[in-house]
Amino acid sequence: MAIATGSDAVIPGIPGLAEAQPWTSREATGAEKVPASLAVIGGGVVGVEMATAYAGLGSTVTLIARHGLLERMEPFAGEQVADGLRGLGVDVRLNSSTTAVRRDGDGVILTLDDGGEIKATEVLVATGRAPRSADIGLEVAGLEPGRSIEVDDTMRVPGSDWLYAVGDVNGRALLTHQGKYQARAAGDVIAARSRGEVVADDAWGRHVATADHAGVPQVVFSEPEVASVGMTADAARAAGRQIEVIDYDLGAVSGAGLHADGYQGTARMVVYTEREVVVGVTLVGADVAEMLQAATIAVVGEVPISRLWHAVPAYPTMSEIWLRLLEEYGRQSA
Image 1 (cartoon, helix red, strand yellow):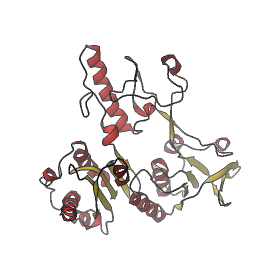
Image 2 (tube, rainbow, N blue to C red):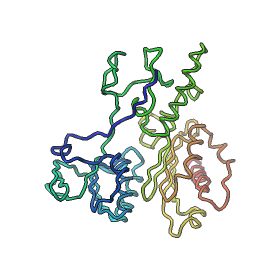
Image 3 (cartoon, rainbow, N blue to C red):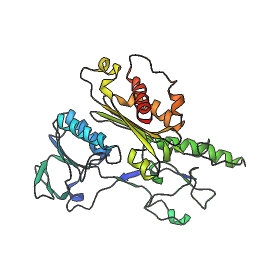
Image 4 (cartoon, rainbow, N blue to C red):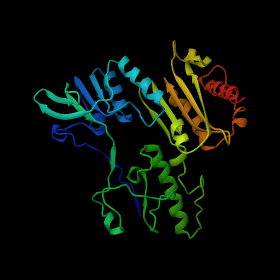
């Protein structure tokens, strides 16, 4: 049996918020009418994307973030996205918290921790997600309802020979493409075990979802876009790895001038120096999502720097960023 029930948006316990009938990502992506104004609570991916979208549709948007934006990514990503949102006319409130919400006849009123108030037609909550596992009978299998379902890398619940969980409900990587990836691994392994085959659970094998730990790609559809895969520099250091961090101005690449006048962006490559392999890449700029798969292959394939030198990017394309990053790495490590 495989559980794939997904997740629900979390509504934090801010006084009055639940009663104010807030939007979640579901309502925001299904709305048939653009509100005159929108207050967004949360500075993560959903908050940033919806602020970008509704500002582009003509809504007056205020985004309230408890700390910075996109905090699980490289710091420069959140900083550049904040600048981009402001350029779209969004009122970005960083290091700010909502303490109360009330709805009146004209919309919603949010009270902030500094005593100020924000008035908006609608309020969108984007403060995280919780597994949809509260009422599906997990207690029968000795599991706690309402919690993420722990699984091994073959997606099987430890201690069970029949129960699997894939997608958001297992809490590993809450992204549609990772859920599909997990489902492929689980489908293969369930079929193999049903035939009595011995299943190897070594990293990067056919029956495991190793990329959930080491190679998760993600795109934030903001202006500018953010595309990342693997570890940030801080995460790599926290894991005890000796690293070299290579930053480069994406706008200085030859292909950038062909892509757009005045192109601005940043690329970062994180190299694990002991093995000389790339463990993380972050790209910020217009349409960087289209360059993410090359970075994902480099990270997942653990392609040595010495071999990456031979992956020659065509001139003049944005992919020349790889040549520039490798050149910078060569200079810094010389």
